[in-house]
Length: 357
Image (cartoon, rainbow, N blue to C red):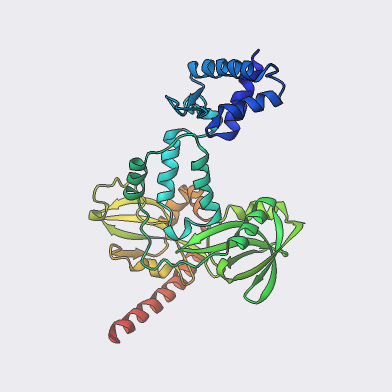
Protein backbone atom coordinates (compact mmCIF):
# COMPACT_ATOMS: atom_id res chain seq x y z
CA UNK A 1 0.00 0.00 0.00
CA UNK A 2 2.87 2.38 0.79
CA UNK A 3 4.83 1.54 -2.36
CA UNK A 4 3.04 4.10 -4.65
CA UNK A 5 3.67 6.87 -2.13
CA UNK A 6 7.36 5.98 -1.90
CA UNK A 7 7.75 5.87 -5.69
CA UNK A 8 6.03 9.27 -6.11
CA UNK A 9 8.35 10.84 -3.54
CA UNK A 10 11.43 9.16 -5.08
CA UNK A 11 10.58 10.48 -8.56
CA UNK A 12 9.85 14.02 -7.36
CA UNK A 13 13.11 14.09 -5.33
CA UNK A 14 15.03 12.95 -8.40
CA UNK A 15 13.43 15.53 -10.70
CA UNK A 16 13.46 18.31 -8.07
CA UNK A 17 11.04 20.31 -10.23
CA UNK A 18 7.34 20.28 -11.06
CA UNK A 19 6.11 17.05 -12.69
CA UNK A 20 2.74 16.73 -14.48
CA UNK A 21 0.07 14.39 -13.12
CA UNK A 22 -0.05 12.46 -16.40
CA UNK A 23 3.72 11.84 -16.22
CA UNK A 24 3.40 10.55 -12.66
CA UNK A 25 0.58 8.24 -13.80
CA UNK A 26 2.65 6.88 -16.68
CA UNK A 27 5.59 6.29 -14.30
CA UNK A 28 3.48 4.34 -11.77
CA UNK A 29 1.83 2.33 -14.54
CA UNK A 30 5.28 1.36 -15.88
CA UNK A 31 6.24 0.32 -12.32
CA UNK A 32 3.16 -1.94 -12.21
CA UNK A 33 1.63 0.03 -9.35
CA UNK A 34 -1.45 1.24 -11.28
CA UNK A 35 -3.08 -1.67 -13.09
CA UNK A 36 -6.70 -0.66 -13.72
CA UNK A 37 -8.30 1.44 -16.47
CA UNK A 38 -6.97 4.91 -17.33
CA UNK A 39 -9.73 6.75 -15.42
CA UNK A 40 -9.57 4.41 -12.42
CA UNK A 41 -5.79 4.85 -12.29
CA UNK A 42 -6.16 8.62 -12.48
CA UNK A 43 -8.64 8.68 -9.56
CA UNK A 44 -6.37 6.46 -7.46
CA UNK A 45 -3.32 8.58 -8.27
CA UNK A 46 -5.25 11.73 -7.39
CA UNK A 47 -6.00 10.19 -3.99
CA UNK A 48 -2.28 9.44 -3.42
CA UNK A 49 -1.29 12.97 -4.42
CA UNK A 50 -3.90 14.66 -2.25
CA UNK A 51 -2.86 12.53 0.74
CA UNK A 52 0.79 13.48 0.25
CA UNK A 53 -0.20 17.11 -0.14
CA UNK A 54 -2.32 16.99 3.03
CA UNK A 55 0.67 15.61 4.99
CA UNK A 56 2.83 18.42 3.61
CA UNK A 57 5.22 16.24 1.56
CA UNK A 58 4.37 17.70 -1.86
CA UNK A 59 2.95 20.95 -3.27
CA UNK A 60 0.89 21.68 -6.36
CA UNK A 61 1.74 24.34 -8.94
CA UNK A 62 -1.75 25.63 -9.74
CA UNK A 63 -4.38 26.44 -7.16
CA UNK A 64 -7.05 26.64 -9.84
CA UNK A 65 -6.95 24.86 -13.19
CA UNK A 66 -8.67 26.03 -16.34
CA UNK A 67 -9.63 23.78 -19.23
CA UNK A 68 -7.76 20.50 -19.69
CA UNK A 69 -4.46 21.74 -18.28
CA UNK A 70 -2.62 19.08 -16.23
CA UNK A 71 -1.77 19.78 -12.59
CA UNK A 72 1.92 19.70 -11.68
CA UNK A 73 3.57 18.57 -8.44
CA UNK A 74 6.93 18.81 -6.70
CA UNK A 75 8.54 18.03 -3.35
CA UNK A 76 7.84 20.45 -0.52
CA UNK A 77 11.42 21.45 0.46
CA UNK A 78 10.37 22.24 4.04
CA UNK A 79 9.58 18.55 4.54
CA UNK A 80 12.88 17.29 3.06
CA UNK A 81 15.59 19.90 3.87
CA UNK A 82 18.28 17.31 4.64
CA UNK A 83 17.51 15.05 1.67
CA UNK A 84 17.67 17.99 -0.70
CA UNK A 85 20.89 18.87 1.09
CA UNK A 86 20.55 22.61 1.54
CA UNK A 87 18.20 24.87 3.46
CA UNK A 88 17.17 28.38 2.49
CA UNK A 89 19.50 29.82 5.13
CA UNK A 90 22.40 27.72 3.79
CA UNK A 91 21.57 28.81 0.25
CA UNK A 92 21.78 32.47 1.26
CA UNK A 93 25.15 31.78 2.95
CA UNK A 94 26.38 30.17 -0.28
CA UNK A 95 25.32 33.19 -2.33
CA UNK A 96 27.04 35.56 0.11
CA UNK A 97 30.24 33.47 -0.04
CA UNK A 98 30.30 33.67 -3.85
CA UNK A 99 29.82 37.44 -3.62
CA UNK A 100 33.23 37.67 -1.93
CA UNK A 101 34.94 35.92 -4.85
CA UNK A 102 36.86 38.01 -7.41
CA UNK A 103 34.47 38.73 -10.31
CA UNK A 104 37.01 37.55 -12.89
CA UNK A 105 36.99 34.04 -11.38
CA UNK A 106 33.25 33.51 -10.97
CA UNK A 107 32.92 32.10 -14.49
CA UNK A 108 35.50 29.35 -13.94
CA UNK A 109 34.02 25.86 -14.28
CA UNK A 110 34.64 24.83 -10.67
CA UNK A 111 33.01 28.03 -9.36
CA UNK A 112 30.16 28.26 -11.87
CA UNK A 113 29.04 24.82 -10.60
CA UNK A 114 27.86 26.66 -7.49
CA UNK A 115 25.14 28.21 -9.67
CA UNK A 116 24.08 24.68 -10.67
CA UNK A 117 23.80 23.74 -6.98
CA UNK A 118 21.65 26.79 -6.37
CA UNK A 119 19.41 25.96 -9.34
CA UNK A 120 19.01 22.33 -8.21
CA UNK A 121 17.74 23.25 -4.77
CA UNK A 122 14.00 23.41 -4.28
CA UNK A 123 14.26 26.79 -2.54
CA UNK A 124 13.91 29.84 -4.69
CA UNK A 125 15.47 33.12 -3.57
CA UNK A 126 13.22 35.96 -4.61
CA UNK A 127 14.73 38.61 -6.88
CA UNK A 128 14.77 41.32 -4.19
CA UNK A 129 16.70 39.15 -1.74
CA UNK A 130 19.18 38.06 -4.43
CA UNK A 131 19.70 41.69 -5.49
CA UNK A 132 20.40 42.66 -1.86
CA UNK A 133 23.00 39.89 -1.58
CA UNK A 134 24.72 40.81 -4.85
CA UNK A 135 24.88 44.53 -4.04
CA UNK A 136 25.59 44.39 -0.29
CA UNK A 137 28.54 41.96 -0.19
CA UNK A 138 31.49 42.72 -2.44
CA UNK A 139 35.06 41.56 -2.87
CA UNK A 140 37.45 44.53 -3.23
CA UNK A 141 40.65 43.60 -5.12
CA UNK A 142 44.09 44.85 -4.18
CA UNK A 143 45.50 47.61 -6.40
CA UNK A 144 48.28 45.32 -7.68
CA UNK A 145 46.01 42.28 -8.15
CA UNK A 146 46.17 40.78 -11.63
CA UNK A 147 43.93 38.46 -13.60
CA UNK A 148 45.06 36.03 -16.26
CA UNK A 149 42.53 34.26 -18.47
CA UNK A 150 42.34 30.60 -17.51
CA UNK A 151 41.97 27.58 -19.77
CA UNK A 152 39.17 25.59 -18.05
CA UNK A 153 40.11 22.41 -19.97
CA UNK A 154 43.61 22.43 -18.47
CA UNK A 155 42.33 23.40 -15.01
CA UNK A 156 39.94 20.43 -14.98
CA UNK A 157 42.93 18.14 -15.63
CA UNK A 158 44.74 19.72 -12.69
CA UNK A 159 41.69 19.00 -10.50
CA UNK A 160 41.67 15.35 -11.58
CA UNK A 161 45.35 15.06 -10.74
CA UNK A 162 44.78 16.54 -7.26
CA UNK A 163 41.95 14.13 -6.42
CA UNK A 164 43.46 11.05 -8.12
CA UNK A 165 47.01 11.78 -6.80
CA UNK A 166 48.42 10.97 -10.23
CA UNK A 167 51.29 12.44 -12.23
CA UNK A 168 50.56 14.89 -15.03
CA UNK A 169 52.90 15.61 -17.92
CA UNK A 170 52.90 19.40 -18.01
CA UNK A 171 54.28 21.55 -20.84
CA UNK A 172 55.64 24.45 -18.79
CA UNK A 173 57.69 27.32 -20.25
CA UNK A 174 58.48 25.28 -23.36
CA UNK A 175 59.63 22.22 -21.37
CA UNK A 176 57.88 19.02 -20.30
CA UNK A 177 57.71 18.35 -16.56
CA UNK A 178 56.04 15.58 -14.56
CA UNK A 179 54.30 16.56 -11.32
CA UNK A 180 51.59 15.33 -8.99
CA UNK A 181 49.48 18.47 -8.32
CA UNK A 182 48.66 18.75 -4.62
CA UNK A 183 47.54 22.36 -4.05
CA UNK A 184 46.14 25.28 -6.03
CA UNK A 185 46.89 28.79 -4.76
CA UNK A 186 45.32 32.11 -5.75
CA UNK A 187 47.92 34.80 -5.11
CA UNK A 188 47.40 38.43 -6.17
CA UNK A 189 44.82 37.28 -8.71
CA UNK A 190 47.06 34.63 -10.31
CA UNK A 191 46.72 30.84 -9.98
CA UNK A 192 49.74 28.76 -8.97
CA UNK A 193 49.97 24.97 -8.88
CA UNK A 194 52.05 23.32 -6.14
CA UNK A 195 53.16 19.82 -7.09
CA UNK A 196 55.61 17.02 -6.33
CA UNK A 197 58.07 16.21 -9.12
CA UNK A 198 59.58 12.77 -9.91
CA UNK A 199 62.37 13.34 -7.36
CA UNK A 200 59.75 14.16 -4.69
CA UNK A 201 60.67 17.85 -4.59
CA UNK A 202 58.04 20.56 -4.19
CA UNK A 203 57.55 22.81 -7.21
CA UNK A 204 55.33 25.89 -7.68
CA UNK A 205 54.18 26.44 -11.27
CA UNK A 206 52.43 29.53 -12.57
CA UNK A 207 49.26 28.23 -14.22
CA UNK A 208 49.31 30.75 -17.07
CA UNK A 209 52.70 29.30 -18.16
CA UNK A 210 51.17 25.82 -18.66
CA UNK A 211 50.09 25.30 -22.28
CA UNK A 212 49.45 21.55 -22.41
CA UNK A 213 48.76 18.68 -20.01
CA UNK A 214 48.82 14.92 -20.60
CA UNK A 215 47.13 12.76 -17.96
CA UNK A 216 48.77 9.55 -16.71
CA UNK A 217 47.80 6.67 -14.40
CA UNK A 218 51.10 6.85 -12.51
CA UNK A 219 50.48 7.38 -8.78
CA UNK A 220 52.46 9.81 -6.65
CA UNK A 221 54.18 8.86 -3.38
CA UNK A 222 51.59 9.21 -0.61
CA UNK A 223 54.17 10.23 2.03
CA UNK A 224 55.33 13.32 0.11
CA UNK A 225 51.82 14.28 -0.99
CA UNK A 226 50.69 14.38 2.67
CA UNK A 227 53.88 16.17 3.74
CA UNK A 228 53.67 18.98 1.19
CA UNK A 229 49.90 19.41 1.41
CA UNK A 230 50.41 21.07 4.81
CA UNK A 231 52.66 23.77 3.37
CA UNK A 232 51.53 27.30 2.65
CA UNK A 233 52.16 29.16 -0.58
CA UNK A 234 55.73 30.31 -1.25
CA UNK A 235 58.57 30.42 -3.75
CA UNK A 236 61.84 28.49 -3.67
CA UNK A 237 63.94 31.53 -2.66
CA UNK A 238 61.73 32.29 0.36
CA UNK A 239 62.89 31.22 3.82
CA UNK A 240 60.88 32.16 6.94
CA UNK A 241 62.24 34.06 9.93
CA UNK A 242 60.78 35.48 13.16
CA UNK A 243 60.82 39.19 14.01
CA UNK A 244 58.52 41.94 15.34
CA UNK A 245 57.20 45.38 14.40
CA UNK A 246 55.65 48.28 16.30
CA UNK A 247 52.25 49.61 15.19
CA UNK A 248 50.54 52.69 16.72
CA UNK A 249 47.68 51.91 19.11
CA UNK A 250 45.30 54.09 17.11
CA UNK A 251 45.54 51.61 14.24
CA UNK A 252 43.41 49.12 16.20
CA UNK A 253 40.56 51.66 16.30
CA UNK A 254 37.54 49.57 17.44
CA UNK A 255 39.25 46.17 17.30
CA UNK A 256 40.44 44.05 20.23
CA UNK A 257 44.18 43.29 20.44
CA UNK A 258 43.50 39.67 21.46
CA UNK A 259 41.10 38.89 18.62
CA UNK A 260 42.48 40.98 15.73
CA UNK A 261 45.19 39.93 13.27
CA UNK A 262 46.94 43.15 12.24
CA UNK A 263 49.32 41.51 9.76
CA UNK A 264 48.82 38.36 7.73
CA UNK A 265 51.63 36.24 9.29
CA UNK A 266 51.14 37.52 12.86
CA UNK A 267 51.23 34.93 15.65
CA UNK A 268 51.14 37.21 18.73
CA UNK A 269 50.59 40.87 19.74
CA UNK A 270 51.03 42.83 22.99
CA UNK A 271 50.90 46.43 24.18
CA UNK A 272 54.30 48.13 24.15
CA UNK A 273 53.92 51.67 25.55
CA UNK A 274 52.16 53.80 22.94
CA UNK A 275 52.56 51.02 20.39
CA UNK A 276 51.38 47.47 19.77
CA UNK A 277 54.25 45.07 19.30
CA UNK A 278 53.30 42.52 16.64
CA UNK A 279 55.27 39.26 16.44
CA UNK A 280 55.21 37.78 12.96
CA UNK A 281 56.91 35.63 10.35
CA UNK A 282 58.81 37.34 7.55
CA UNK A 283 60.41 35.91 4.41
CA UNK A 284 63.53 36.29 2.35
CA UNK A 285 62.99 36.72 -1.41
CA UNK A 286 61.34 39.46 -3.46
CA UNK A 287 57.72 39.34 -2.21
CA UNK A 288 57.83 40.17 1.49
CA UNK A 289 59.81 43.49 1.50
CA UNK A 290 57.02 45.29 -0.38
CA UNK A 291 54.64 44.53 2.53
CA UNK A 292 56.78 46.62 4.86
CA UNK A 293 55.83 49.81 2.99
CA UNK A 294 52.48 50.03 4.76
CA UNK A 295 52.35 53.41 6.60
CA UNK A 296 51.32 52.11 10.03
CA UNK A 297 54.61 50.24 10.74
CA UNK A 298 56.68 52.54 12.97
CA UNK A 299 59.61 50.29 13.89
CA UNK A 300 61.11 46.87 13.10
CA UNK A 301 62.70 44.64 15.77
CA UNK A 302 65.33 42.20 14.54
CA UNK A 303 65.22 38.65 15.97
CA UNK A 304 66.52 38.44 19.54
CA UNK A 305 66.29 36.07 22.52
CA UNK A 306 63.09 37.65 23.88
CA UNK A 307 61.28 37.46 20.52
CA UNK A 308 62.32 33.83 20.09
CA UNK A 309 61.20 32.97 23.64
CA UNK A 310 57.72 34.24 22.80
CA UNK A 311 57.83 32.25 19.54
CA UNK A 312 58.84 29.01 21.28
CA UNK A 313 55.85 29.31 23.63
CA UNK A 314 53.61 29.47 20.54
CA UNK A 315 55.49 26.85 18.52
CA UNK A 316 52.40 24.87 17.48
CA UNK A 317 50.61 28.01 16.26
CA UNK A 318 53.69 29.15 14.32
CA UNK A 319 54.13 25.76 12.65
CA UNK A 320 50.60 26.11 11.28
CA UNK A 321 51.68 29.32 9.53
CA UNK A 322 54.92 27.84 8.19
CA UNK A 323 56.24 24.38 8.98
CA UNK A 324 59.80 25.31 7.89
CA UNK A 325 60.39 27.92 10.58
CA UNK A 326 63.66 27.79 12.56
CA UNK A 327 63.97 28.75 16.23
CA UNK A 328 67.74 29.27 15.99
CA UNK A 329 68.74 32.88 16.72
CA UNK A 330 71.71 32.64 14.36
CA UNK A 331 69.57 31.36 11.46
CA UNK A 332 66.81 33.93 12.06
CA UNK A 333 69.34 36.80 12.10
CA UNK A 334 70.88 35.52 8.87
CA UNK A 335 67.51 35.43 7.11
CA UNK A 336 66.46 38.79 8.59
CA UNK A 337 69.62 40.39 7.13
CA UNK A 338 68.83 38.85 3.72
CA UNK A 339 65.40 40.43 3.97
CA UNK A 340 66.99 43.83 4.87
CA UNK A 341 69.16 43.68 1.74
CA UNK A 342 66.05 43.20 -0.42
CA UNK A 343 64.17 45.87 1.54
CA UNK A 344 67.00 48.36 0.94
CA UNK A 345 66.91 47.52 -2.78
CA UNK A 346 63.16 48.32 -2.86
CA UNK A 347 63.75 51.59 -1.00
CA UNK A 348 66.38 52.69 -3.52
CA UNK A 349 64.03 51.71 -6.34
CA UNK A 350 61.24 53.89 -4.88
CA UNK A 351 63.62 56.82 -4.33
CA UNK A 352 64.67 56.57 -7.96
CA UNK A 353 61.03 56.52 -9.00
CA UNK A 354 60.35 59.76 -7.09
CA UNK A 355 63.43 61.52 -8.49
CA UNK A 356 62.36 60.74 -12.06
CA UNK A 357 58.93 62.33 -11.72
